Amino acid sequence: MQHQNRRCFMKHLTGLTLGVSGVLSLLGKSNAKPLKRPNILFAISDDQSWAHTGANGSRIVNTPNFDRVARQGTLFENAFCAAPQCSPSRAAILTGRNIWQLEEAGTHGSYFPRKFTVFTNLLEEDGYFIGYTGKPWAPGNWEDAGWSRNPVGPEYNEHRLEPPFSGIKDFDYAKNFKEYLSEKPQNSPFFFWFGCKEPHREYEPGSGLETGKKLKDVKLPPFFPDHDYIKSDILDYAVEIDWFDQHLGKMIDLLESRGELENTLIVVTSDNGMPFPRAKANMYEYGTRMPLAICWPGQIPAGRRIKDMVSFIDFAPTFLEIAGLTAPKEMTGSSLLNILTSHKQGLINPERDHVLTGRERHTHARPDNLGYPCRSIRTHQYLYIHNFKPERHPAGNPPPEDVQLDINTPDLKPIGSGYNDIDASPSKDFIIEHQYDPGVAHSFELACEKRPEEELYDIVNDPACIVNLADEPEFQSVKQGLRTRLDKALTKQGDPRLHGNGDIFESYPRFGRMRNFSGFKERGEYNPEYQ
Image 1 (tube, rainbow, N blue to C red):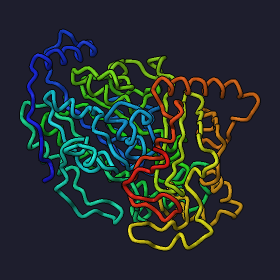
Image 2 (image 1 turned 60 degrees about the horizontal axis):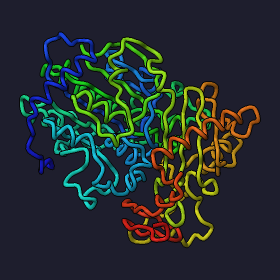
Image 3 (image 1 turned 90 degrees about the vertical axis):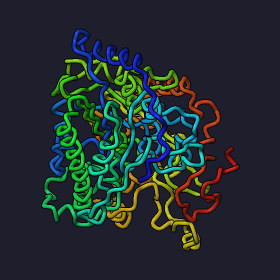
Image 4 (image 1 turned 60 degrees about the vertical axis):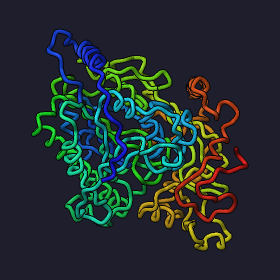
């Protein structure tokens, strides 16, 4: 068991009483019998776009437990990760800050600087029993950044199982949660992070069809070629979403059997979009828009759909407020508790009319380990994207003409087919291999070719983000208004990209394996040219 170094729990009885009273007041129950501080179960899948839950209308997945949380609580229709990549997104969740405020942790697979405050530590210091199973903050290096354990908390990953398909990891998430609960002190509330490693690639080819899923039920976004090969790959992805939901259901049942369900806030979401071309690692809807359902049985109104724009940086202040704590001033996000406790549906808070997202380097996909920096603002109708380096390939460079660079070298990955910011997959291979075919060429262009500095999409009429309106005369005022609004927010939040030292992001180390591109490729080292 790898959950050592747990600090002794502090008992703040006065703070507990004040915290519960504050939450009860928000719930409109100031005269109610005092409750225990609520538990929090945070369930986060790995690489799942918002569209792929039953509650959001998908026919390819079987998600009764996500749907139950949505039915017994609130389904958020406009929830967005802070970055379309695993580790920056998770760092933003933990800190309540945007990625441009997180230095190395704002890029993928780098350090998580110890100086940043994480809500998990604040909860633990105030008496919460914390832990995780599966994937916490990752990938990246927290050990050499000064942490004694992963920023999420102590690990519970001892129990394993035989998965039904080769692409699924062997973690017995539900059994690990059961063991965690058995170790929880009787009077301590808990925060538990269920970090499912699915539906991250790889998948077992044909697993979707084997489970009885149907190609005809796949609703392809228009940036994919209409081909059964792509549809089958999406069905394999759906199998792993089902797996996440099954373990979520076991955890909910366990809470119910222990009499803990009504005192537990359950949050179910994902960290970034589906691992397909033009989705994950992209600023479009299938990269940043996330499934999100939250319930607290008996404490927040059920059966509501919320249209307010919410960001993952809002989780940390929400969890702290639920626990009766005040969020640190450096947290940029805002608590969702007032939305959760409202009886209204649709638009609740008119100030929640936009979210910001960003991206820096994803994998080692270009010479000198350069990234593809972007920032965006998403309103109810429009998505505006600023690509800071439009001369670069957004999905990574194509394979170099000098094939000698692709020779396998110790500790270096081969470049392969290039475009390495797209996860290796059958769909990627199909699009690259058929890039000159009439039915595929446009999909290849959208996924892999260079993009202009500015992009603007009408989400209401073009949710797949196909038609860029940035150069259309009738949309110039919209574009300029959003650009001004974005730049003002980024400047206020200290984004290096707006303060003249944006290239500092190019210097940050990558701890994943490097590829055999030319130029700087030292694993775990700072690039001195950009320091």
